[in-house]
Each structure stands twice: as C-alpha cells, then as structure tokens.
Image 1 (cartoon, rainbow, N blue to C red):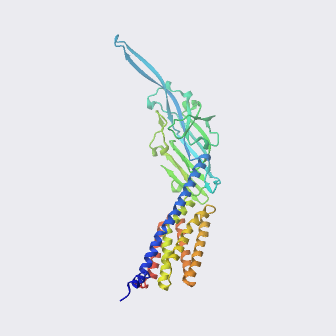
Image 2 (tube, rainbow, N blue to C red):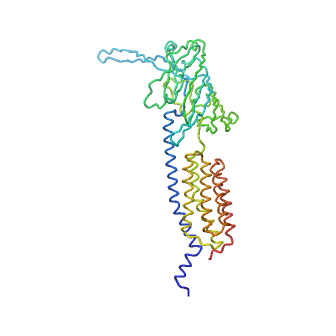
Image 3 (tube, rainbow, N blue to C red):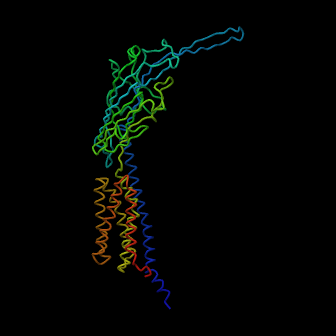
Length: 449
C-alpha cells in the first residue's frame, strides 16, 4: 500500500496541481496589473487637466451664432381703471420698446482652420488651432406685419447687429462688419449670468436701403484661437458653409453632416461643405420675443485625436491578462511535453517581467511615440524572458520558440491597438487561431501524469 505522504507528494507533482498553482499565480498577477492600469488612468487624467488649462488660456471650442438683425419697435398697452365713487372711467396708454430679431436671407461661410504646433507643458501636449472665418450674405426687408406691428412704430434708426459667440479671449481680430457701404464695429455686451456664451453688438446701423429696396448685403471676418471644436448655427434661410483644415482626423458633428460627395479627408487634412435650408431646421427666420438659444441646432467639426498615447496604453494593458495567461500556458505545455520541472517562483519572475512591460511602455511613451515605446518595451521583455528561459529549460530550442511566440503575440496586440473599425474582428479571429493552436499542440499530452 502506497504511503499517504507519497500520495500527497505525487499530487503536488501532478499536472492538475501545477495547473492550479499557475492559474492562481495568473490571478495574483492581476493585482500589480491593476496598479499599472491605475497609473495609466492617473496620468491620463493629469493630461486632460493640463489640456483643459491650456485650452482655457489659448482658446476653447469656437461657437458662432450670427449675424442677427435686431430692430426695436414700440408697443402700447392700454390700462382701464374705474373710480368706485364717481364711476369715472380712466384710460391710460403706456408705451414700451421691444425687440424683433431677423435672420439673414442668405448666409455663406468659408472657414480655414490651421492646427498649430502643439503647446507643451512638461511632458503633456495640447492640440490647438487658429481659425479664420469669413461670412457674407444678405438680409431682406423684415416682415413686421406678421405680428401686427404698424410701420410707424418701427424704430429703423436704432437697428443693430447681434452675434453670439465663444469666450471673448478666443477672438484674435477686431470683428468688423461691412453692411451695405458702411463698416460697423462690434462691442461686447453685458450677458445674463445664466448665458454661457458671449454677446457682441454694433451700435445703430443704417438699414435705410433695407427699408427702401428690400435687400442689404453684408460681409464679416473674424479670427479665433481655439481647441477641440468649431460650431456654427445655420441661421440663414439658405446657409452654405465650407471648412478646410490640415487636421487629418475630423469628426463631423451636430444636426447636419456633409454628404460623402461634399467632403474629402486625407492624411494632409480635410475639406467639407454643408448646405442647410430653412426647411431643414425647426426654427423660423424671425423672433418677436427674445433671441432664441440655438446651440443644439449647430453643426461643425470636432478635431479629435482618434487614439491618443494614454488610450493606446490603456488598450494595451487590457490585454495584460491575455499575455500573462498565454505565456504561462506556453511554459506549462513545454514543461508537460519535455518533463522539465519549472518552479512556481520561476513562473512568478516571468509574470513580473510581463507586468514590467506596461510600466516601461507608459514611461517611455511620455517622452517619445507610442510605437517607439512599444518596440523598446516589447524587445526588452522578450529578450529578458528568452534569456531567463535558457537557464530554466536547459536548451536553446524551447527559449527560441518562446521568444518567437512572444514576439508574435506582442505584434498581434500592437496591430489590434492601431486598428479602429476592425479591432474586434481581427482580435476575435486571432484568438480563435491561438485557441486552435493550443488545442492542436496539447492533443497528445498525457494529463494523468
């Protein structure tokens, strides 16, 4: 009868016990891997804080809503009072001034957005741009009759032009408007505390030609320093917009996007055109109450970074469990086939080397490109584990195979990280072939020993 101590010893030397211990070690190594993920997240948050601070100083998202014709008019309110003692009826008429807002008949915009050299603060970079926006269009004679306002009550000589736009410090040129044959300057207006955008308004403008001839043309130029986005509200009865930029990754946003035939995107930049008719929007060409908030009806471009360096590091770290598990599986299969004993401590050292890859990756990335950091970190870890394997496996054939397998695995993960639209597809197909390979090479192993 076999000694119970020998049975216990045989159990710990069995494939089942070794597989269990390797599996437990894989789970334990998720703890330092999670610390690495937290480090990447912390650095990513710090980068976002720096970008937000830089954008606040340079210029934030550009928003433009104008040019709106503002015309005051008189209203009269009649108040009737009755003296209870004498029954005398008294009528009092009170005059007040209200404002009507009219949008252009035609509005054309041509914007050129140039991404400038990223602003650096320490190791962090912030992408910013300069935007030159040119507008032209025309107004038609406002229809006050639609609201039963008599001609004599319209204060034509006190008309002005209003613009709603982004933060004042983003504006880098004097916004002047040529209306007819005259040029008018815009000045900032005190905003309501609840209004998050700035208001610019001219002094009284000459709209005699609009009153008499029924049409008045305008031109307007403005320059911005900005970041993130450029958005325009299509207030023209017919709005046409064109935007060109040297940025290669635009995200067209808002209620309207350009048709495929009206946009071209390449590695050198993009060009896009929009056309919005008044029939396409849920607001009218005039307002007799207040100037409506139309931010939700804007369109434009978000100058995104498709996958920044920290996002790439985060995506790489998500495959950490896969890399550790497959590497341990390769060593375990070699151990099972060759009958070479690998101690759990040696598995631990290999696992820590695999975790070290991600700390090397993020630290090198912050001072160079992700591709270069991935190459250096991957080569270092593959070399370290391959050399260490020579002392464990006592030959060069298996370490060479391990080095090749790790190289293929890291290359596969790099390709997935770089892909956007096909990442899930390529990853799923790759994992299927990895599983098929493991099943094939392990088919003849005697798991009873």
